Structures are given as structure tokens and as C-alpha cells.
Image (cartoon, rainbow, N blue to C red; front, side, top):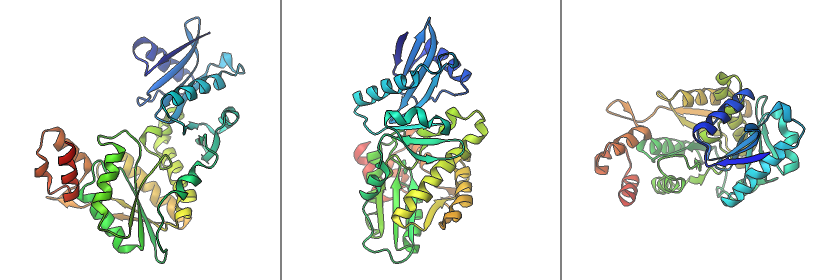
Length: 328
């Protein structure tokens, strides 16, 4: 048996991996950064991959089940994560696979009918929540917004202002995933600067507990039409069952979504599921410029086309304009 690695794989080996995963009813995630293959007679018999701090695409050939290859694959990936200074790891898998990963130090975090999310910290979510800044008092509704802010626009500011007026406090979570044009730290800084005059708005990094595209679990769902729904359910239940109660959140604010089908489906699922937990979803009509909804994607397109930052005053608040002039 031989071990082959790639950061990530390319060419013929990638094609062989994709074929192997397909035979195991899995799909290859284009965001993967590192893969380990166990081969025998030039054929793949087991594999697993890393995407940031998420272990995914773990598969063992049916002919080699019972040979402890899952543990060997995950051990290799954990060692690589340590070399990359990644100590907090997650695994998305099928619920029936829990017994493979529990002996390796992974603990169930959230389960749906199709998905199981595990992490290698027994109380990781609790520690994350305890480290968040809390309101001085909690009389009145507590609101929440979860956004990427890539970058922070006047549309984001309008949504936050609306929640700020209607709630005693608002938790604004900025996604921590490093998959955007602007880094997590830059996006967090832009949001903090854009909201610093709103005394009842608390801006936090989302950490790893508000699920984003890099950990979308469609790679192991045979029916891809279920993928968006499964991801939504996992994320919404994590928020509604674990995060919202800890922070006493009773309202969640989102902007209307006329363009992105995935976000539109996510909002639809929020409307369906959140009321079951006593959480009100408030959908706010997007702020518009010249009858067009303001979006971060439009800002990015203009920047990529070479537009002068000063020409974006209709789309960006002064704090973001200032920040962009410093970093671009």
C-alpha cells in the first residue's frame, strides 16, 4: 500500500480521485486544499481531504472495508492540519458514520436526517459563545444579522440600522471563512467601523459555527437537489437550537434576495423553520440605488473593472470608502 498526497491533486490523479469518489456516491469539492490517497496496485482504496479546517470526502473502497483505513486516512489529515497550524477540526459526514470518527476524538455537534457535523473539541461551541461580548442588559428584543460583508455596503448599513432601531441589542456576525475577495479580518474591520456609532450593535466573527459555502455538505448527498435544503437545515438548527438561546436572540434580520438562488432558498428555509423555535424572521427590502438593489457583488465587479473608489459613494458608506483607500 502506498500513500499519495496533493495540495491539491491535479491532472490524472485528480481524475482518478473523482472517479473513485463517484463510485462511493460522493462528489469532489473544488475548494479542497489537500488530499491523501491510499493506493494499491495503482488503484485508490481510500481517501480523504482537507478544506480549511474541515475534513471531507472521506471514502474507503468496499473491498477494503474493515481494514481500519478510515482511521488511517483521518490520522494523516489531522497530522497535515497540525503542520498547517490548524488545531480545531470539523467533519461533515453521514449520520451512520459517527462510530468511525468518535474514537479519533470527534464529538457530534449537530445532526439532521442526512448530515452529521462533528468537531474535535467537546465544548468548542460553548467556549465560542462564552467569549462573545454580551449586552449590558437584555430588556427588549435581541436581534441578529449574519453577513459576509464583502465589502460592507450601504445596504448592510441600512439592514443593521433597521435592526438597531427595532431591537434592544443586535448581534452582527461576520463570516470568518477565508473564501472571499476581502479577508475575514478586513471584512470584520469594515463592519466594526461601519457600525461603531450604533451603540446597541455588537459585531462578532462568526467562527466556525455559522456554516458557509466551504462546508456545504452536498459532496456526500447522492441527490444533489437536496443539498441546499440539507445545508440550510443544518445551519438553521445550529443557530436556533444552540446559538440563539445562549444569546437570547428572538429576531433574525435578512435582506431580500432578488439575485442569488441559494440565498433565496436559505431565506425561504429561515421563514419556515425559525418560527418553530420562537424566533421571528424579519425580511427587509434591500436598499436600492437608481432602482437597483445595492449589493457587495456589484461593488466587487466595479472594483475589478478598475473603477475609482471615490466613484462608489452611492454604494459604500464613508467608513468603507476610507478603509478601501487604505488597502487598495
